Length: 223
Image 1 (spheres, rainbow, N blue to C red):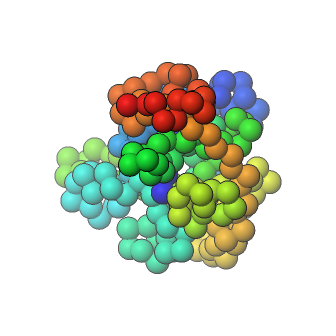
Image 2: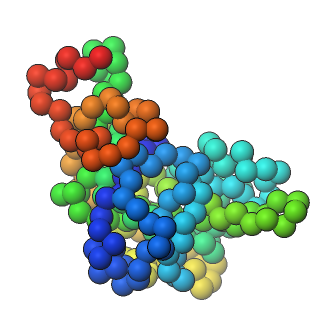
């Protein structure tokens, strides 16, 4: 599961990494939650999408509120995701995400990252239109079974796409999904993690303090 992440990279680093500029509205965020706008990179460049995929056939946007993740094992089959998986794959930039683990009767949040460097989640996106013709673009992050040390935190983790695989993931020129399925199966992120304060549990909280590591003696002292 990936229900909260952060992106604090500089615009220049994003341009260098993706060879494209982010939208003017881009700003660093440390507590990105479902239903809010997220930066997404498609074959056409960057966009801001609502996090929580709304299928094109949905009656209203609320259906997307619980569809912020898609399972790699079933994304090609589920009616809500299969068309987007074939034709509208995207990359979702991040510098880390949060996961929670039950400890001493409470949920302890952890910051998960890859050397605090910019990287990409595998995502898919969809376009939805209401009865008045207003359009909404939305996306979801694909998750897979946790591997290596991540199994200590949760049974799921977001799918990482390596830079050399960006073109293959974004290529939706045909209905052939063999390469996309291979990338989902072969994902090998080197996620690291450390405990952070529980303030991140409230999506209204923001700021760099959310990713500061807790000292060992603070783990048992937090309220």
